[in-house]
Image 1: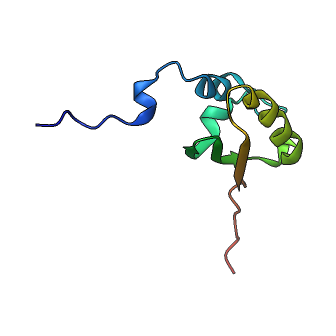
Image 2: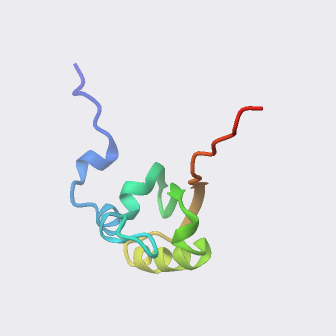
Length: 95
C-alpha cells in the first residue's frame, strides 16, 4: 500500500518563499501578505497570487515590484498578482 499523499509545501516547512510572504506587509498597513492571500499556486519559478486588496494599500504596481525583488533571490522569476478589491458594504435605502 502506498503512503498517504503529502502536498508539496508540507515536505518543506522552511520554504523561504512562504517566509517572505509572512514577513512582508501590504503597503500602508500592518497586514501581512500571507494573511491577504485567497489563492496561491507555484509552478517552478512562477508564483500566482490572488490577494484581497484595499485602495488604502496604494498602487499595486509598486507593491508588485517590491514583492518581485524580495522573492527573486528565492527562485521566483515571475509573479502574477490577481487582486480582489475590498469594498465596504453599501446600504441601499428602500424605495
